[in-house]
Length: 336
Image (cartoon, rainbow, N blue to C red; front, top):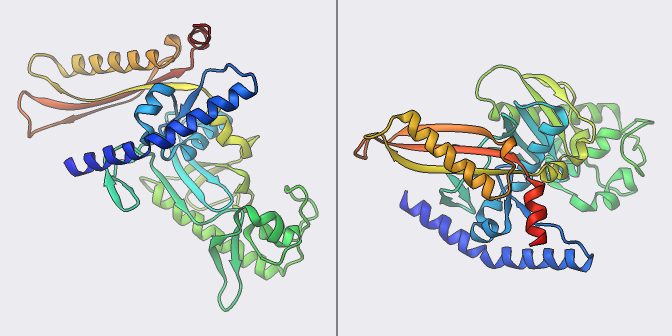
């Protein structure tokens, strides 16, 4: 509705000064290191946008972190459809990989308790990460409090006195995947009970993101993913790809650029197929103008929604296309 549009516009305007400062700082950092690279900014659909678009629509950067991990997981696993579980130090983000890109949320976007109407990825975040504190007083409880960056100082594995999920993951192991850590000597019963709590948390979150009861493949990424089990209920396969801990950076560096259309079309003097074709052409032009290579463009999704409350057989057509970054265009812009 109108109120959600107003809220989105206000939030976008509020972020303008922040994005300007960020871009100025990034450009200065590149200049200080004698780098003449063309700059692109990640947006929350898993693609890149040029600086002009980022300055106009900074709101589209909200939520781009999890989508980078989803795109990186797709690249590392060679899968196009799966659930992606990205575990950091404090939280776990669960998103849906659909045709190689993050699934967009169909619900109204709520930021700080305020309803808006701009797009957001369909991502569920839970308070479970590599630094999540395990409470053993009275009743065993996992999180949601976390050590965060203090894990290297305060966790048992690094000489501290706070029990966290990473301690559980490497407990009683002579060979563990965490450099510099010391395997803490914990009771087997405590380790097993905590692992079961972690399993319950992640399986419940995965169930919330599934659209049906079918088992789905899950791709584990992020440095904190060592805390999760490699077998789960409702999951057909758990995949831990090589370089899983760098999925976020890899997703950001893949260099795909998108173009999209979300407009109302009249079918009074044209067929639906003709209207969709026009929308796709418009989205393709936007992607090319943003730096996408023509030969690599592909249509990510097409959605047609009839609008019964408008005359002239009106429909709302949503289209997104994406393609790899055209380096020839980038080099030309650098020279100019």
